[in-house]
Image (cartoon, rainbow, N blue to C red; front, top):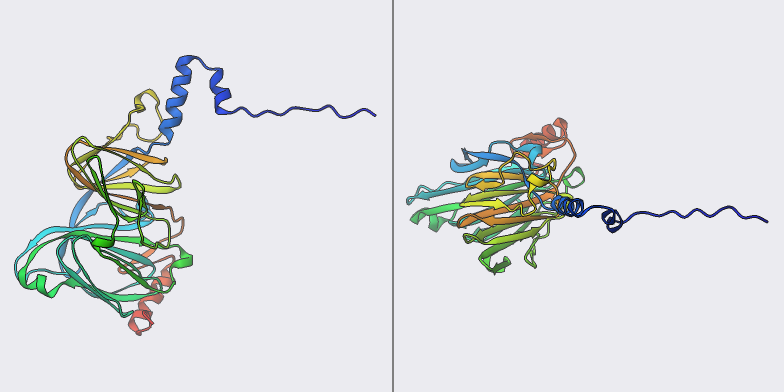
Length: 329
């Protein structure tokens, strides 16, 4: 009985492919492979100043919505110096369908909401509020701060929720500065609000995978930050200037991402980054910035005022629920 001829099937590994190349080709192959894993700047979005809430000044990227997914809003509040009795905040207002993150650098604020939560925000504190199916809240200057005046500076960031979580139960997480993990290493200081940095992890429970890190760097210092390749990533600089390192040189390997786009990010600029597994950052001067990352939410966005849903009908229902008093029930 004759058997069928056996056919050997082989797959070439990267090492096999490299073995057949010249030294120059091998060098270029390795460089190109490594460069693909390093994220680069693909777009720079400038900011403009607007007034929000009770009239407080914020710097906001000039382009928002799907380009920043899952982030709907990145507002830098201030910095602004108030005299006694001048400070302003955000009176009672509703939200549905997303999360708000408030991170205070200077000042003193107080939070109240329809779920019975209340808290005080001081420098370094984080408030992570999941509006879900509906919540009504206020964020106002603390009474003592209102009397004395002073500097207010911080961030409010809106994080979109996928359709399956938009009507989840509201929740509120408050992390004081002394419980918010920080690390200092070779000229780099970082507060890990969400995600992980330099081996330190946040205690915030996020609905979707989010990285949010506040970084300060001394001139000439370097930071390598790992970012999962399936997350969108961006950097918002609010002091100094940083460069995304390109030690492998895009010039030698014309990749589709990063070509023709400056790799420097300066004060008041939001840099959108290419796909990859890590960011390599060098500080050209003493610098301060946020690293943000999260998944692309490939769903329609219907947005009006304080509500972010998937359809116009859901927005109309949110307004009806608010008007008849059932939004936060």
